[in-house]
Image (cartoon, rainbow, N blue to C red; front, side, top):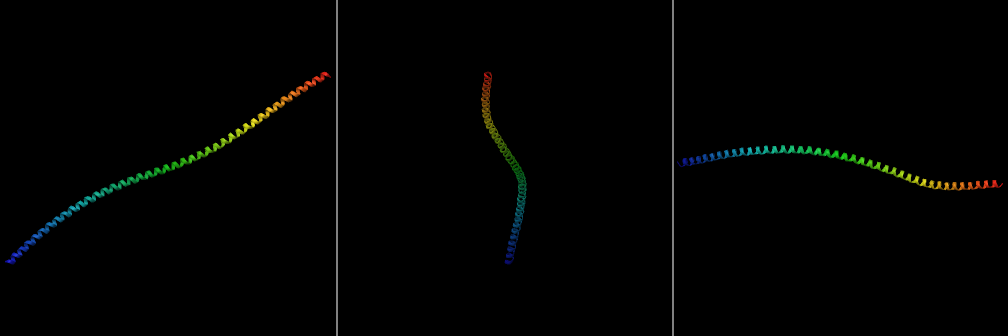
Length: 148
């Protein structure tokens, strides 16, 4: 009887342990299921955020490419304007050189005209003096004719 009682207690203990293991397995399966669901939710959220991030990076890359193209266009425009400015500076320098040469030529011509005017005044004085002498000689000749 004792053995039967002992066997029954053992069987009862084994049954109790088996039920407890079954309960634990159910809880583990339930927790695994919850954990899997949470992982799937987290994964879906991460995928959504990753998609948003990729989209945002794509937009920013597109904006960056547009800005780079704008900067390149502006750089080319600045280079063109600088070349035009250099050309205009050279034209201005050439014109300044031409004007300076003309001003010098006018100055030289003015000096020459001054010299020629001075020479002309001397010639006019010489002509006036010679005219007076000729007139005086004519008067002398007329006077000698009358005297003769």
